[in-house]
Length: 272
Image 1 (cartoon, rainbow, N blue to C red):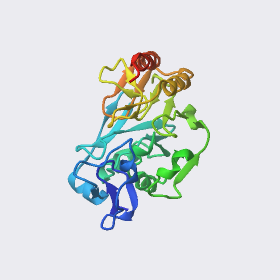
Image 2: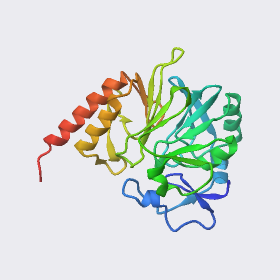
Image 3: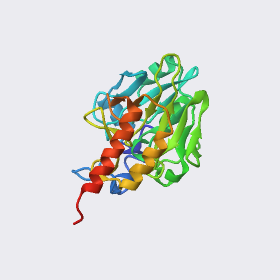
Image 4: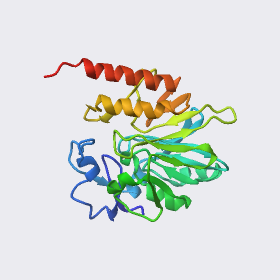
């Protein structure tokens, strides 16, 4: 529904009207995120459509989906080929007619998979518009601000999808923080699609592992070691994290190398 409240800071949609919003956004009040410097503000999909336009452009072997303005955290989503249709990896708040037409021309959506609650945005509107399920890890169910039958919760550490794709729960940033593994096929390199974990560094030879990026809180060394161990068992050549042009090549080695550097840096910090 286009008049529901959307937090202006994280762009997650709630199940109440924008003219009667909650007192605060639990996702932004959590120490991993922050309330906007001007205080809690709300917007709606109607307002976002008036002020922004959707944008798509290639991101390696995938199509990036975003907007021409900075909405919420500013992530972009990825359209991932999925048989004759597509999966949407992560989600963005803006869904306008032009974007719907482009996605439908490419085969529509067979499902939505999202890395963690910061990027849930208007996922229910997307699911309704394309008549597809949203796959979320059950451990993050408390963070759902707009419950809906389109949401399909999965349990455990791995969700096997069709066409060889799989979702892997990494934890760390959120209990259910996940990555999507896309196998190599028809000349496309094997890819790991992440949200914030691991996140591509400014030097694209490296990635990082954090509990909170905006508040700069690192993950403990044991968590990084555990996450790197999970990813060591996957085969991927390229990594795309949450924002435009965050592509890391030679990605499997970059992840392992980065984990080693991260752990070494934490262990070298003297105790206070």
